[in-house]
Length: 464
Ligand SMILES: Cc1ncc(COP(=O)(O)O)c(C=O)c1O
Ligand SMILES: N[C@@H](CCOP(=O)(O)O)C(=O)O
Image (cartoon, rainbow, N blue to C red; front, side, top):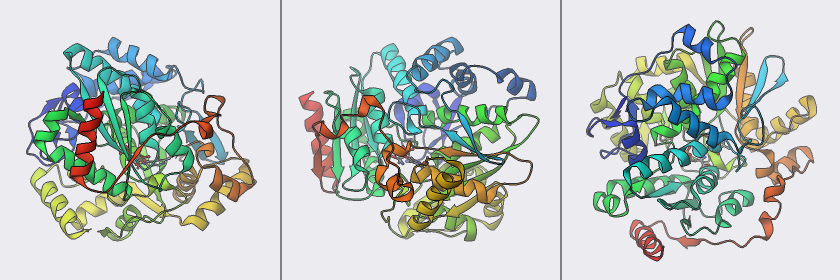
């Protein structure tokens, strides 16, 4: 499988090359040159497989030409061996026809582990084969950072620099990142929002001499491998509901649009996905887009679901590319104008096409707390604020006869204050994290300035 850029001005690459490159040289995102398609017999053959084997088979066509199936199976087995739940991504019935697809049973208690634990192994495998090293620079609103740190800590071939928006994550999230003392890990608290952190990473990719100097790489969902590794849990859930014979709908609390894009990718592979309902907090650019074809940046506001405090959803560009009939010139022009003006409206036919599959629901903080309260009162289900938004979107978008699985993206213990306020319950961290609040933190605080961040990264790498 080869990968092309959504902006059309970068050379096509293999899966392994995309993995290490992260973002295309023209600022675009890599997309598979064509979608693999699974016939019904192939979906059926996945039924009942253990999660690692199913994951390897779903990812295999995307990695064709780079990694063979036995290698993928081995890496998937290693990646999911440390999860706390035997099913890896269990389905829990909340009420009639509405299910939570729990994705937070990995080491850092958020859905990011589902892909990141595999990416850690994939990077190690490819870098060892090539005898190379890389520097991963990542942006986080709270969860990607700790998942990346956990997946790559101690690696001899990968240095990891994580930028988080200062004061805008939960304390648990920050400490999960800043208390890791391995020499290959470096944390930066940036004076800005998540969007500033993400723009900073993209600016470093655009600085080609710097990109080469530090051998820059990415593990945010701008990296196609992250999306590929997030497809299998949708497949697993759909099969549990009777796919390929019966359709299923998914609801996904959404920020950078990576998780829901993986569900959409599964539908491109032939999985019968009927609806994709996205939930947002007050940073509702995506839900506004779906209701009015108006994507206007309004500035990031803090909320009870900080991981979704995002306005520029990077992966929307991948959907846009498809909606525009894979016209990379039109995609590049639309994205450039969007970043210049802060507004985007797409051709009406493309927008209508998006609305055939996608629906959106926005919850402010009070509505989020009310949803958490309701889930606990009526179903005894303790949801974190992000998962509660997903479940509310799922309830709103449910249709009779079509099961709705809502992605539960974080463990409630990551957001204890909101959970306590909504339910009076204090969810406990697992024993391996019980001393989190007494561990020493280590991070630097920097202004939102490219040169300051680049100098700091150079100093970190020099000291390694
Ligand atoms: C807990 C949680 N839920 C939802 C999201 C949104 O997911 P995505 O950015 O893939 O849309 C994030 C961050 O990405 C998250 O950390
Ligand atoms: N919510 C994310 C933001 C980054 O998302 P990613 O999926 O692109 O890595 C976070 O928790 O950091």
